[in-house]
Image 1 (cartoon, helix red, strand yellow):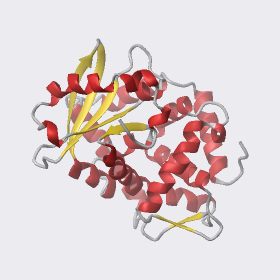
Image 2 (image 1 turned 180 degrees about the vertical axis):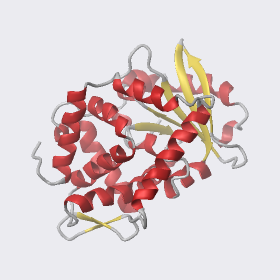
Image 3 (image 1 turned 180 degrees about the horizontal axis):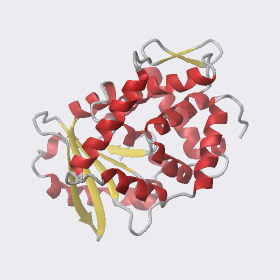
Image 4 (image 1 turned 135 degrees about the vertical axis):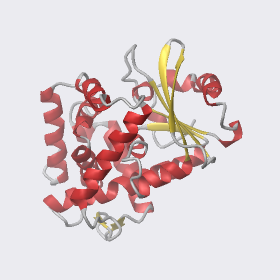
Length: 279
């Protein structure tokens, strides 16, 4: 397994990945095995899992005629959620926000993947989806050049603008002083590099960054609305066309952090984005 977060993944998970892939192959046997890329993300990777936590998996392939879909299965008595999708769907989700970030935004958090050379394309989808929204956040506070930490804070706040319930996951991932978190420091490198490689930010002579002209929306207010609608619509389709899917999602999120924890991390992100945080 590889990826920019591999050394942050828990050893126990890494040791069992090969067996997990073998077990999941039968659940996705409609896709030729030579066509597959596997991506693992979520609490099982980072070590924040509970006994009831899912294994969160993406399986990407080159069969454009097979639409994205969700496969529910189990592994060693634990639930597993596999999203099977063609690479073209991931690209459209990044570039055109076709699924409301349902796939691209999962890759904003730490992940590991195989084969090793797929990580760059995974991160490109994150960059294309999120950088234009982050640029808008920056414009509210200060549109001048920004540090890596500010750009990452912009990105978190942009994510939260569209999906406020993500704050529960952020509060769990970034406990304590945000700037001291090993995950934060790694993300500040990984995400900003992805933005730069996608030509969505430009570096300045001072080692800072500005958002490029490519990171812009003509109608941000309506874009955010349709992005959220696509996310919830596709999520409901993946969960048996259940109209209650948004409430299920929010209910699970709210169990993960208190109101005070969520508010504290949100205020920390705002301070970092404004350049007012020292820790």
